[in-house]
Image (cartoon, rainbow, N blue to C red; front, side, top):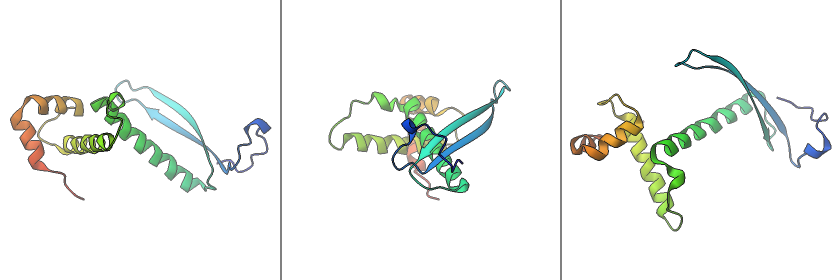
Length: 136
C-alpha cells in the first residue's frame, strides 16, 4: 500500500485518489509446472488499510472469475438480449445452470462438457434439474 502519493506526476493526481495498491502474486501453473511472479496495481477512492485492500482485490477477482466462466460457458458477451427484462432473466438462468453444473457430482467433466451433455441427454438433464440448488 502506498500512502505517500507525492511522487506521482501531477498528470496522475486523480481527484479523490486515496489508495494505490500493489499486489504481487507467485503463480504456479499446475499443467506446465511453470512459476511466475505477477504484479498488479489498483487505485481506489477509498482510504484502505492493507487488509481491506487485499480483501477488495480478492473480491474483485472472484467476480471476474465468475464472469469468465459465464463467458466461456455461455458466451454471455454475445447475447442478443439487450432490452427489457430479458438480459437480467437470462443472466439469472445462466447462473442457476452454472450452479447446477458445479454442484453435479455424477459426471467428472468441465462445465462446458456438462452443458453439452445436458442438451443431448434427457436423463442427465432431469438429474440436474431434480437436484435443485442446495442452500448453504
